[in-house]
Structures are given as C-alpha cells and as structure tokens.
Image (tube, rainbow, N blue to C red):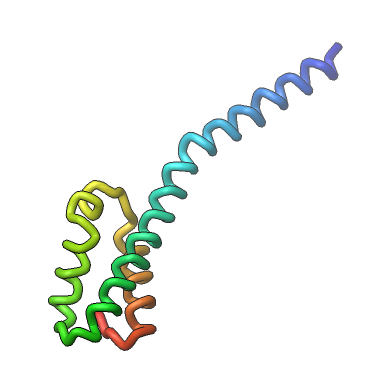
Length: 98
C-alpha cells in the first residue's frame, strides 16, 4: 500500500513539473524563435536593398517598413538575440551594423 502512495506522489510531482515547464517554457521558446525569424527576414530584405545603393541607416528603416510596422511592434522578441542574429546575417552580405 505504501508503494502505491509513493508512486502516486512521484507521478503528481513529475506531472506538476512538466506542466509548469510547458506553461513557462513554451512562450519563451516562441519568443526566441520569433526573434530569430524576424532578424533573418529583416536581414534578407536589407541584403536585397544593399544592391540598390542605400546607406546602412536607410536599409534598416526600409526593411522595418517593408516587414510591416505592426508585425515589428506587436511581436514579442528578445532584443539582444534579434540584434546578434541580425548582425551575423547582414555581415554575410557585407553590411556592417557596428
């Protein structure tokens, strides 16, 4: 009888840990993925526009508006993750954001 109680208690504790991990982990994972996705999309636009002769500041502004201000403002992101991804991706096509 005691063994069944311990298994039930262990199951409840494990279930609680899994549930809390899902509740708090999934939104953070989505936020991180959105940060990378937006940075890659913005970098792609900036690299495309670079060939048209825009300055770095103009590239960022044009990419921001081409992506859609609502999308950029309303999507929760991790700023440092997005910035580092954007810098890495734009450096591949010769844009220096530093």
